[in-house]
Image (cartoon, rainbow, N blue to C red; front, side, top):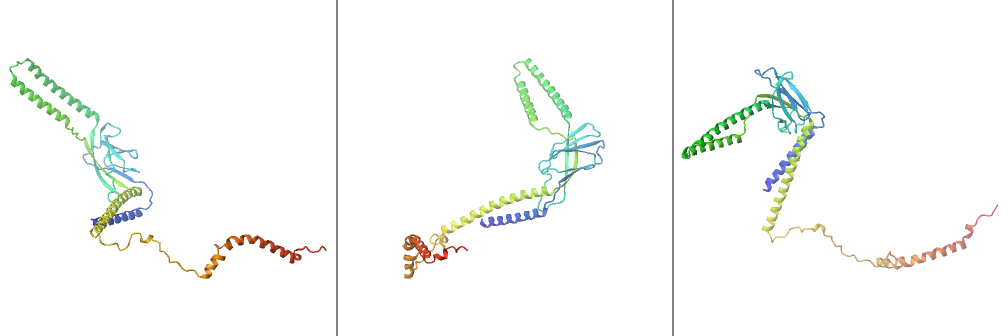
Length: 324
């Protein structure tokens, strides 16, 4: 177990070093990413139709003919969506629209440690009919339902006219009605499949910028750092378990080095002082009575009498010269 945790820790360290090397290779290049959208040409396509592309981030719109292409710059690949609308040319009627395609999983960089200059993705888009077609279908379904209800009401009226002696036919009719009701409920519960009006084949050419690559690499670096910390915790826990097991298996042995031996202070052996040192400490040292009491008091008298003797014997040296 300890060996597996150690190997996982080593692998995480190698992965982190690879990611850091890839970050150094990316450098600090400025620029925006670009997304080129190409409508793959079809021979059997109607030449009187065109598609409108709506990009959500940034909010831009472009119109393409069959086989045409356009380019979007500065695309937020993590939150952008693309919607395709099929319509007739020159501002004609709208034939159908597609659901908003999330571009985050489509424009992923894949292996960011080995980046490419551009990523090509084939994207088939299903075009669904407009709301007017759906409302017409709903009205037709409603008309069929009303017709069925009127047909079901007729036998109920006839049953009222029958006598009470016909019990068996009544039971059979009730069973039929229950089976029909269950079928209708099952049909309501099952989702209604919508057939696409047409399928538009788009080719996306995504050229990521240095910022996109750095964001992907930093995300990988964060994940690898989390895995490394988890592996380190497991490794420490397993080492502690092995140490406790070894100490439990051999209780009689004493440790070779006691804990906290570096914190102990060594006591020095006292050194005997000589007689001269003792005499100096007692009478002349800083802690002696002479330096602590006698000298501070006698200092003032020595200065006073010294000044008197100097003025008495050498006073002429202090006299002013005779006037000229």
